[in-house]
Amino acid sequence: MLAKLSTRSSVRRCAVTGALGLALLGAGLPAVARDGTDPGLARFYAQKVRWTACESADAPKDLQCGKVTVPLDYARPGAGTLDLALARYRATGESEGSVLLNFGGPGGSGVSELASGGKDFLHLTNGYDVVAFDPRGVGRSSPVSCGEGSVEILEATDGDEEDGDTQEVLRRLRNAVAKCVRHSGPVLPHIGTVNASRDMDVIRQALGDDKLNYLGFSYGTRLGAVYAAQFPGKVGRMVLDGVDTLTEPLPQQGLVGAKGQQTALENFIDWCTNDIACPFGQDPRDAREQVVHLVDSLDDDPVPTAFGDRFTGQDLVGAIGQALYSREMWPLLQRALAQLVEDGDTSALEGFISGGVAFPVRQEGHARGTDGGLADEEDVPLDNLPAALMAINCADDPDRPTAAQVTRSLARLRAAYEKASPIFGQYRLTQVLMCYGRPKGTDFIREKVKDVDTPKMLLVGTRGDPATPYRWTEETAERLGDAAVVLDNRGEGHTGYASSKCVHRKVDAFLLFGTLPPSGSSCGSEDDGVAATDG
Image 1: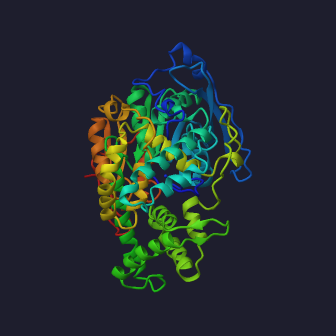
Image 2: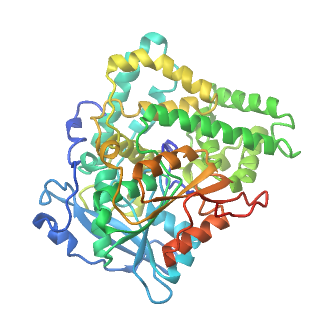
Image 3: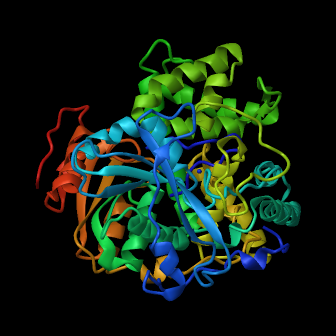
């Protein structure tokens, strides 16, 4: 999926480059996978994780941390290494192995997410060590950054240019990408889902597991599907929740996302205007117009934040989009919008963008850890999530329109996105244009991730998901073939495991005991009291 893109982001809460050195970015993405039988990879597959207490003062006392070492470039295993950060909750009884989690993004830190939201997964410790990791380029694992280029990317695509200034937009995008190269270090040419999947196989072996048991959310479903195609004989019990597309080009993904978020926003407004405390009054149509006006006014006249930065309309769009991922966050969003409308206070909205804290983007230098070792927590660039999101999505995407094609299509694309959503259209269009100036990505996902020869895997699709529409679950299940078993979650919000008790039970039953629901079974909306069915 296309996650939020923000210049003030730390960790995405679950459920978001010129000619200078850019020829390297598409390298190191093999058409087929190699495994630990390759002599050059033997030393990586021979390692074991050494677990210790986590150094972070905020980490839960029962959370343990470790690392694994992987090749920088799988095509040249001797040409450098990367350390990947791991965290785990140990099994409470006798462990049957591990279950590896990926919370989505792309670009979210699995270690930080497990530390802050691990209670949702503690039931799995009845049989497994529950493990999360920071993928290459993310969090403490050689984090990428664009420095001031993150701001430049947003400004270059803000829609202020006249029709004749498209070339200026493209020039600014190339400049921004060059800054991403300069700030990210040697990992950038080797980032992307194909290599992250190969890293997961090294992690599997280092954990001592013969098979990979896996629970992936949103983008994590793309990562899981790629692993199934690369290592079909190593797939254990695999769950994909909030299923991503494997085939749609970025422009179509962006339109789907804009439409989905617009629908979620309208549902939120309908809910809000039933409450006297709604800052937009009690008329839903008028409230929608007020939201559009508020975004436009903040773009024209941003308000200062406590850090001296400016809070723009696009910052507001990012905050609203983040809050709409979960219906449970609607009351918090209502209060945050009231603080903005009534007091000009942006602090609560900034918290949605950043996962709880708002900081300005670090403008200079790169993080320690770009030499392949783990970065210290305090040295992870504050734009790491959007920088990693851009790098991974672009590495996964083989389409690269020329400057002439972008120039011809920009006005049409902008009109289509604005029609899809007057609120989210521009924001999503920015994400579509973000690959301009980067080398072509891999075609492995579109061409090879299909008809996987694996044990049965569980795909969970949520009918009201604003980020990964239910039809993507059906399309991906058909593409993966007979191995895919679909669970239809007839609820709202992005992914089902944390929001639906029914989904939670069925996923845990499969991971812990191997009990799969019949394909096509459903979990009803718990708000309307509909029971789960097996039909």
